[in-house]
Image (tube, rainbow, N blue to C red; front, side, top):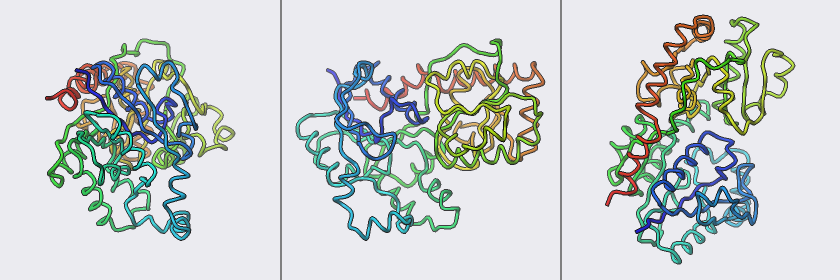
Length: 389
């Protein structure tokens, strides 16, 4: 009998503008491979990632989704919030509260969908939307995707100056409302498993098909970074250019790809040997064409999708310690860890100048990816979440 799943995801993953979109497209690919029928509930009028109004599914999208339900975020929030509350949100006075992005119209739409259709699973993509299941009347198993430790992310975004007590309390309460939780990182899973006693926790890292090792391919790029528009990518790239870049050989070729470039509109004039590319539909040519990638993250939690993608092609990574924590191991993983600008620059030049060493790291990373993040292995682990009777 075909299982049915309703996924709430607050953006259009088919835009591929963020690493998390790749994560959920892979999950949709898994559901299709297991003949699990998926409907999606999403929103319009929130940001550039939102679905357009009255959007019909395209042909390729219909391969992964049966139906799409949309709710107007701007209209729903407008009705829910008082003028005073909107002013507080506009000027940041509610940042001392753990975010709740749900609103009454969205909850009513969700309830009406569940009244009309029977689903085996209701899958919520973020704890920020976790209150969607609060007071919900439905005979369905609830599943939460945990992509980040949100309390830490909030603390770092606020400059590490706020109290986190009410953040962590609310995050635990919301997680405890679910039946199952899938965690992209072991770190978050091990922490919350101690405080949340209702859900069944599963470690489900990001997965990708195993690509051919690209070491022998022709290289036109020395250093590659791929990143979306978020404050952690912004701060990491700012640090790279201000502190690391001056220590590098000026002849190396660097490419920065993604909407992170919107933070650095003046950089192309300052750094003529760097290519700043706002968006690339296909990333394979960039991964196969680079000697190494970088992940200079100074904050953030979860698992860095850009590292998993790089390793899937056998491309070694120079990363900060915070960037590789989500990999589960800090060594023998195809990454060079560096926590100072000088060390970061030295590791980059080592991998560029020493072909034999770069080849060894390439093989190491490719093997690590195959053992820990290959599509087949992770899909089998997902079976324990969605096909277990």
